[in-house]
Every structure is written in C-alpha cells, then in structure tokens.
Length: 171
Image (cartoon, rainbow, N blue to C red; front, side, top):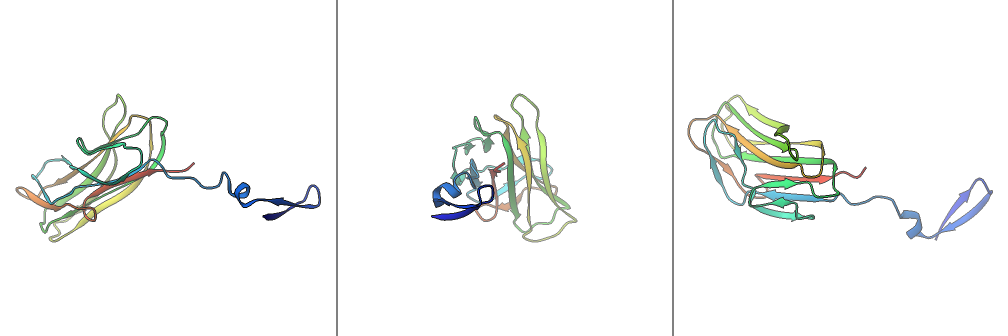
C-alpha cells in the first residue's frame, strides 16, 4: 500500500502498488535484431543489400530473413530507433558506407541514414550508426553496403559485426 497526500481534501489516501504503476512505462515493441551469419564479399562500386539471414529476436515476426527486410506491421506505425553496423575485413578503399533505406508502401526508396568511412583506412574498420525515423504501416527497411576498393572485398558476418535492428519508441 502507498500513502498519498490529497491536497484538495487535506487527507491521506491509500493506493495499491499495482494501481500506482498501471499505465507507467510500456514495451518497445515491435523490436528486432537481425545479422549476417557468416563472412561475405561485396564487389567494388556496387551498393549491395546486406543478407541478414539470421535473427536474435523479432517480437512481431516482421523481419524477413529471405528478402532481408523489416516491414512495419499493421497497427505499429510510429517513431522507431534503428541501428546498423558492418565491419571491413582488412582492406582500404577510399570510401565504404552502410546505409539504412526505406521503401514506403507504394513509394520509392529514401535514405534514413548513411554511416561512412572515407580516406582509405586499412584494417578492420567498423562502420555503423543509428537514427530515429517516423515509419508508417507497410514501410519496408533494408540495409546496403558499398566500398570502392578494387575487386571483391570481405566483411565480417556474425551478430557482433554485421547487424541491423530497431524498436518502436513509446510515445
């Protein structure tokens, strides 16, 4: 039991903990975390959709591991926190980026964010970022990666190196 002072009646009121906390908080659903399950190569000068073929969780079964797309489920429009990352497997290239893009239901694709590594850094560089996006039911999200080092270059694939996830914000 919780005691609360009611100033309008100059009295103490009793309330149960369950009634006190009802309506506070919530769950950030739907939410998902998908990743590429093994190392992979990307050809130079080609924006390539990342093949997120495995999941750690997906509360609404809204991420499709066959076409690597998260689609906003019915009744779940709103603001989403989104994040993505990939890791280069020791090559330079003067430009490498990862990009989350959205295809609205019945519309054309638009960037949500691009995280970039420029300047030809050799090594095992991690490239990633996050964004908040206002999404509508049916909006489809995918992630692309690009590099311009010559030839086909490798990236690390597993749940700690190349992943894509998000969750609906409580409003």
